[in-house]
Image (cartoon, rainbow, N blue to C red):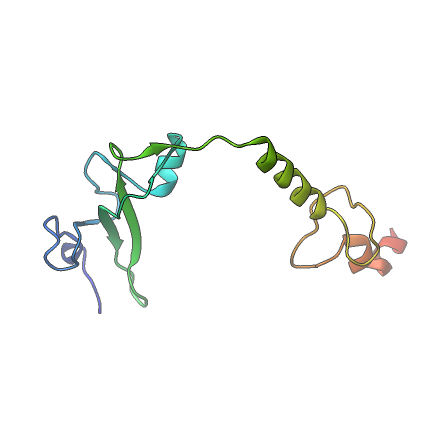
Length: 126
């Protein structure tokens, strides 16, 4: 289904079931999850209030879901246990599974091991 910019404007929700607006033309009072997070808010269990559509040529349209800002709740603060778990997970990302040494940086997922283990010949030449 190919959409035009005019097809993306449905403020009553007749066509798509929820109010729909063209990309970057959302009315005031709505925000995406990322925009809520910048304001230190979260959707807080509310349903999707509206959507933005951006037509594309060869694929389906891009969709961004919008939530009402007045119904959003503040972000929950991190507990000491969550901080500890996050620190432990980040530390585990720095340990090379091949040589079991702390690389001092996050191991790239594309390599799956530290750079020294992934390219041993290049390390000796330098």
